[in-house]
Length: 293
Length: 283
Image (cartoon, rainbow over all chains, first blue to last red; front, side):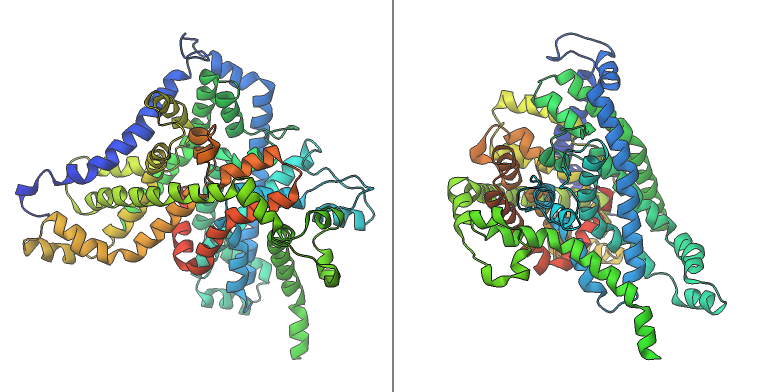
């Protein structure tokens, strides 16, 4: 497309300059610098080769973090996308759809820190002799059980309790995105299958799922990127105590608590490498969109 | 026959009711508890107010205490001081770049566009340490301008992407006829593009504002040791650390941090949802 005459040639540079300065100073240069620092010691003075990476892949706290991020990846992704899909399909059949969607979407508006405090209160634990002020333990006690240390019982209960907070926050997003795609399925197609005697379950598996495939893939990659970077919820609720550590929190601790810039940089680079496939997926999706334009 | 059909749909309604309860109860519990006197809060659960409303007692004491004595009032102000300039700066810089990427011809445009898309999901962690060091030598650490700049840098790729997609979708005849009439890029940008883009600029601004308002990591790294400039999430996280069991304070503090996002969500839901949906990539 032809812009105004050649006289205004410096145009693009002028419009792009502020953005390029910001991107260069805050993203490109620091990223390269971090990669370099990851091969140096705690104070970045002596070259240590792959020593930091060796530590990152062998220290027990990092191994716990890797395990937990994997647990988040499997459980969080399954439940957030799964709940989103179930709600998208079910809400289409009721008249109060918009209201429920708003309610489920609401946690997306608040900070993870606030969500963490809300759920820490839900998980509040007091000895059996005292009145329970956390709703979950009140229910457990009412059903005749003993109060549970939701954020303490390792390794499953506490990690799953944290993951539940993530699911609570992100289900609304998954529901709204999947629902928008679900509404795009031609109603005649679903009706025709039903008239031909297909059960609801068959309709779901044979028509709905294949039709939603690309949307589900998009939502899933979004959830995985969130999981890899997950930080706030863990930082606020347990700060990694009782084996609930995750990669991003570990990086923060190495940076601030231990001032080990070499190891912290190496962890950041590992985090980046885990996300590279999703960067490529996004670029490919963008290119496909552009081709359609 | 009709009641029978209704009955067969009962499980569906019950399931959805359960979902609504699970999504509302935690926030409701926090909200109710933040108004209860300290002694009541520790002697009975907040749900007892529903079963026995006659015993309910409410107070604003918790709010008074966190706002005035625990510094949440100051943090509330800090959040605005951080989020408003950051949002304006990001939108301004992004709109200029997005215009160039959508309607100007230059070498390397495609590569730049793809790089911006790639940068959207690069983890912040990869940038933090070198910036922190630069900030320390320039004494930008613990200052508002330091966070404005950092947030702008981190928010730009997504903002450019969002605005560029919208700008590029505008009909090209519009720009062509303007250029034929002798309009410069500056005129096209200010007189044609910006007025047409008010809804998308609103979505983008709301998204960036809430993103910054709710951020913990950037505040923690660049404002970590400086309590007097801490925004709400940072202050709230600090309170969790120092007063972890004082639920009368934590509930009130958490609700204070949620008020603005909730108001934005309830009043501007359409723009907000649009921004979030477009933000799918950011993760």
